[in-house]
Image (cartoon, rainbow, N blue to C red; front, side, top):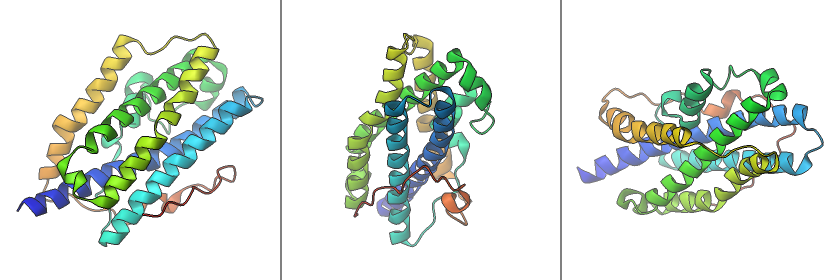
Length: 228
């Protein structure tokens, strides 16, 4: 009984993570496009974003291999389980896909807001990984432990370029209410959505991999291979 619960919990956890990692690197493609149009001369910022994108893709591929080794597909979770989806939706009243790139290019107030949202999301992800590395179910799976340790190592470099841009351009850091929204989204997932999904008897698994329909991004080099 306990082993069955453990397997379902880990499969659901992996499904939420693989969704968020895919959502992460495809959303960063849009950010990179905006920065190229805003500040094509800012090579250090663009290089840091490309590194962030490559890491998110690498994490996605690690979770994909974890599922493939089990002979299973991830559960079909959607943007309701995406931290960045929810955060962008609340802050911009728009989905990530429908954000107006032209506005982000010409309006500093919108771009700085996006930087704060991304930085808060990445810091939240780091704290969550620290908690998961102590979770007994996660600790029972050596491969997942290796994946989360890699994410823990990569994560600090993900919020750094956005916070650095805010500082360098004299913009403020996150306000108390932005932090409160970040905390609400995290609590909503842990307290409400995760238990509901865990108990849903008819929760379907995906029929294909999320990257099956990715647009080709010639500027994004291949993700670094990691042996699991």
